[in-house]
Each structure stands twice: as structure tokens, then as C-alpha cells.
Image (cartoon, rainbow, N blue to C red; front, side, top):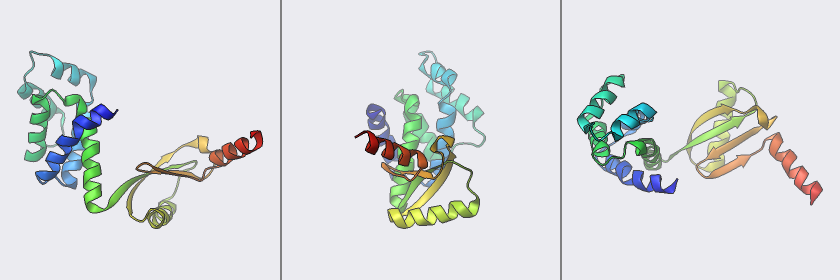
Length: 174
């Protein structure tokens, strides 16, 4: 959804320029999870609901009070009627934080559960392969049959049995 990304980018960049850091990123992610509630979005879209009322509802749901920077961002988002874009703002901000620190997010799809040692070994190998530090998340996907599939940004490394079978199928039918 390119339009949502276009809307979100200036907010994420503004938070970064205001001194947003990794703590603000985790706070913004939690805020985005709360703001994705359909009932809250409907309440925020109600013309009778003021931004202060919406902020009060969100604050009551959040486990910790919002930092001033994230609170100011929330106020700007509500003033401009962009609450639905908060999830994308959080993702954009995380990408900016990662780029600034030279880290990328990696999703490791595995057919089976990986132990901590296996995850560390895979992560170390992937960091050498991609040439940067990675924040790895493991997702179990039994449809892979075996092996792993790694997604780092827009790069995909697929060494799964499923991918190899697909390659063999294409070679045999060609």
C-alpha cells in the first residue's frame, strides 16, 4: 500500500529528527497495536470525538504513559485524521532506526522449531551473507517441509525443500 507508506514517512522522519530512539520505536509499536482496534478507529473517525478524547481512550489502554515525543506524534496524527496510518508509521520509524544503526530485520521461516543455539548459528551465517547486523525473528512454517526461508528487507534467501521441489518441477515441465 504505497499511499499509506507515503503518508507515514513524514511522521516517522519527524519523530526521528525529534530524537526518537529504539525505546520510542517499541513504544510506537505498542501504540500502533492499540490503534489498530476497529472500534477505536471508528471512535476516532466520529466527528463528535475530539483528539483529546481519543488520546484519553488510548492512554487508558496503554500499560505505560506515553513519552512526550510519542505523545506529540500521536497528537499530530489525530489532528490530521491519520490514526489508521499509525501501524505504517511504526514500521517506517523502525526501518529508519535500523538504517541509522546499521541493523536490518530478518524473518527466518523454518519448517521446524529452532533451538537458541541453532538460531544463533543461522543468524551469524546470515549476518556474514548479508553483510550487516540482523534482528532475527523465527516463524514456524510447516509447508516448507524442511530447510529455511529468510526475508531481509526485500531480499529473500530460500533454501527450503519446498523451493527445491518447485525448481525441480519447473525443470521437468520445461
